[in-house]
Length: 296
Image 1 (tube, rainbow, N blue to C red):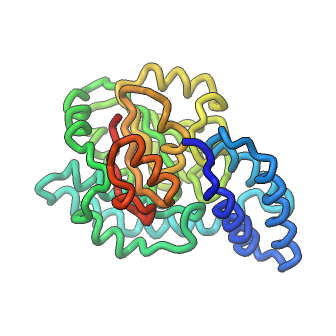
Image 2: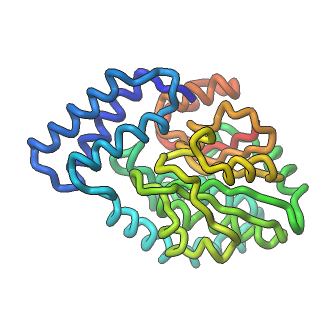
């Protein structure tokens, strides 16, 4: 998905938000915002938003002298999710459709995104996620893909944000029970509230298989800049599960036939792009947290 004019204001908002969270003075906040505006003025419009974030966030970190300003929020998100995980696992287990329940909870966890949203009502969204209509609903194609998996099937699972990775365990429970060989991918460095190897270890992802980084500090999966290992795993996987909006922005035009996207839609630009790809009306995709299962 290519950079859009709406991305300008979004990145300026993010710049202000990061500097404020980091406790910067008004003068330092102004310096951060103006520096980001300079980057935006010269930005190439054929890049993806995650590509541009890779230029913007290192500059912000340099100015505020903080390489991981969201660190405490990431820890808090993981801790809160871990506390409720046993309850949610029980809800999934007792659901008449455990697979869909697990998928819906995993998608709902994607609402935890400090890049896209100022604030979010996670508790309310988690309570409603089992009944909210899917704005993009390729669930039957998803079921068909899962039905073909079995012992030894190779699954590449692309994670997104902290907190969200805990709810991913609900779907990982299902995949592990199939006997699939799961490789999980997190970010190669700190950026926004995206999950890293340290976060993966904290929330127990290693219990499900191998966990690796994508080799980049990018809030997405830019294959051209990822490690060669990631590219090889893409080519070898029986199914690739892409969680979150950032991964969607990076991979929506990849053309891979076995790439399943699970996410919430959190901005109008992504909503419009989704509408172009799927034929779903833009009115159903305003970018306010709509849930999507997209299997091209």
